[in-house]
Length: 256
Image (tube, rainbow, N blue to C red; front, side, top):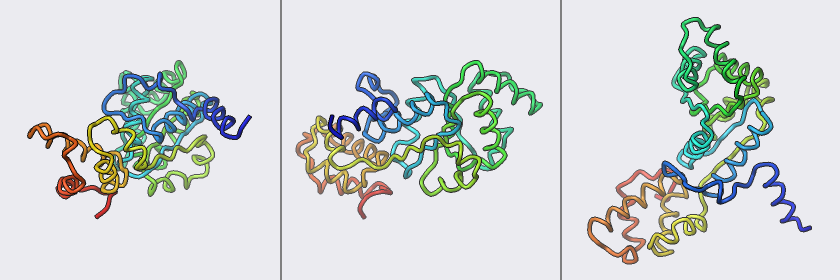
């Protein structure tokens, strides 16, 4: 058996591979890039092994939250978005809404109700903008994870990941770290290969966006609007046209 074949088996057994069948009927603009597939695999592994925490990191705009939301929708997983000074009380109140639990004014009672709900059905719980969780809030998530076998998925950018991992007891409970980055030029061309735009145009889109998926989608949308409103053949669009459109957008990851 070759090294590539063994690597493929590792991906299939330990969650790094997601089949086309599992990605059918994507919703809300989800694009199954290689990075998104790998991320879904990490999430499947974390839930399967009941890791207390999974950490999802990457630059802004690469599809971290979009991919995690896709998983959350498919598995009916609770989703909360941390806010500035995100306290344990606010965290539990948001979880109660997601779990359809009547909110209780007494913190300990609400904590017990949420614990019991997660005990009945351990699952992934997503926390977006996790860098906004203070230490007591992370401790609350740790308690719920330890008590229920649920996995709390903490989503943040590269620059804030050390802020979460600086606590030894939290770091030791992170069972997997999913790093998602920009799409490559080859993958972008493959994704939009049937769109009608030429390869050189799509390569220019990649150069201008740096492969940041959010910027790619925004720029392609502007190109689509241009051709639809003016009935221009997509094949007539040139890299120069793309640059002119891009000059009207703030493309954080691309060329100046």
